[in-house]
Length: 408
Image 1 (cartoon, one colour):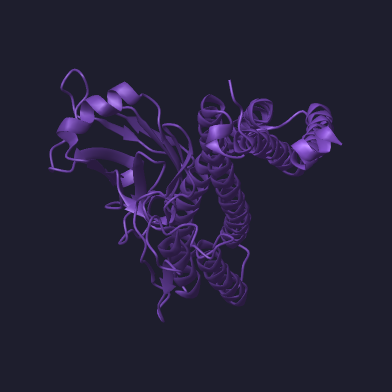
Image 2 (cartoon, rainbow, N blue to C red):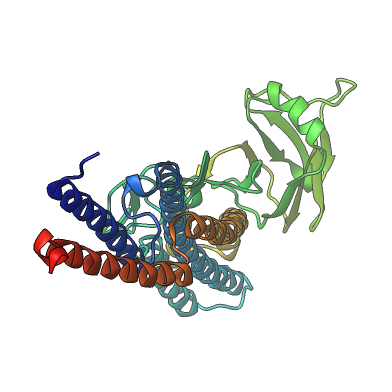
């Protein structure tokens, strides 16, 4: 068999090119620290790298969402705490105003403080998160959902929806709470009904605390009561009750519900109880209205107007008692939302911890698949460099060989 000189040259060149390619690949591994730089390095491993990078990127986005949601909810929690503190101050001022020893100037001073409190609640209601989004605007883009008019009337320009962010596969967390439910639709009275002294009363009757004592009895009578009752007083504290349709309220035996009230006593029927003070005049009334809502800003405005009205102590006390009930309902609503916000923050913390642990796991898996063993790669690099140099030296010797050199 004859071996041509060109064939030997080509074989030597091919061998050196293959060695050079392997050397370049190893140099890339050493410089990048990665075993797989192109898909052809390891097709199966490259597929795993793509999958793991996708999972890591997804978890990173979830972590970013969690951090953003946590910031917003912390801002909301802080704003709610501040509002709650301000409303507690308003409640304290209302209690001071009904102690019967305040002069008109004292009441005017309290009204001025309440006016500042109302403005402060509006300001806090317009709080924003780190991105400048209103905390209590729902999903609306408005920057200031609460607007106060010249007469103290506050309007809400947001909506009743919640913003949500994705913090996991199939898991979304609300990142805010609408001011519509928190501040604009506060239940009146005790949350079930409101008892109020008639506006034309001439006695000294003051309606105090009231509550539902038997929910089943209240619900049973609600269907036929028309949504409320009127208690009418006669001489010497005698009283009777009619429903919203004007029909006498009767007991289980069909007898009209009546009684005699004494100062500091309680009137109870159909699962409700109303505590009162003072002495009613004949013809004075107390109305009971079920349901109903009122915004906290109207409550504060009514308190201001009451204190500035110059009304009797009885009128002022009755009006402020109702306002205190509304403030209590608002603070209950705020407390409920604070609990909900705390629960969401706990969920976010748990998710953040989970993704932190998963990220370590996935990064380790990615490193095992993609990263090169530095010691092995450097060793291979040294061997490949030596082999290439040897091939180059051998080729140089082969190239210089000829028949003339042989026969010398």
